[in-house]
Image (cartoon, rainbow, N blue to C red; front, top):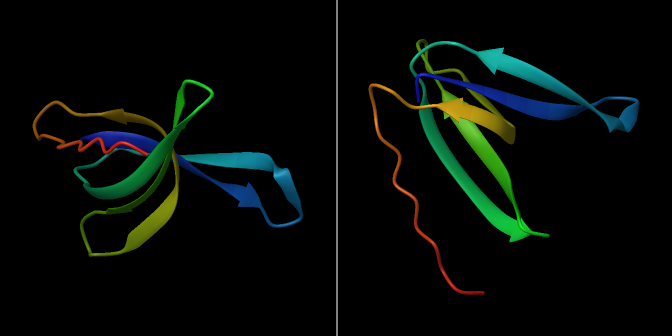
Length: 74
């Protein structure tokens, strides 16, 4: 990915989602489900320096790279 927004819950309030925007080339791995017609994606991303971050994927921009998606019946 070229950039993305991922979130995790606040330490003292699980209802408060904190979104972090990452604007750099990133490796991406994720799993998801479709719930009530919406994608719910958990992901791990890694960029320069090999540090990894995980969370819920809110958005992603893919311009210079590609993403493969595999859909399996439930």
